Image (tube, rainbow, N blue to C red; front, side, top):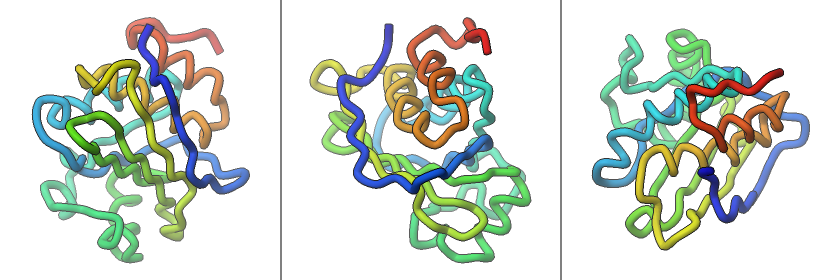
Length: 164
């Protein structure tokens, strides 16, 4: 079973819910950074949500270095929503060789932050993109309509879709 030892929620907007998650370019290095968007979208899809990698979106934002400040621009948010259908944009930043991942989520409608959390692995650092994706999905479950289903998707193989 893959899951984070600890998900620490720093802030969360009450009642905020998302179904479509636009995944911004990830801050970090190495193999995990390259594989994490795909693994994260697989896990979101397994939980009944939709994940869209902005780096692969047919848009001017694809391939750009999109950060929180840039994404807070209403025109950029409009473009992200148009090309992805995303309710939210997910920003991930690896800290200290993947010993922790900072998760920040803003809405595409207003740019308001609805979730800020950190996730840490079982061991010293995340060893695989799948392990990291599992941990991130545990954090994102807090802003979905069916958090239990999302946590189940985070804790199982993505091929096994949990019963609704």
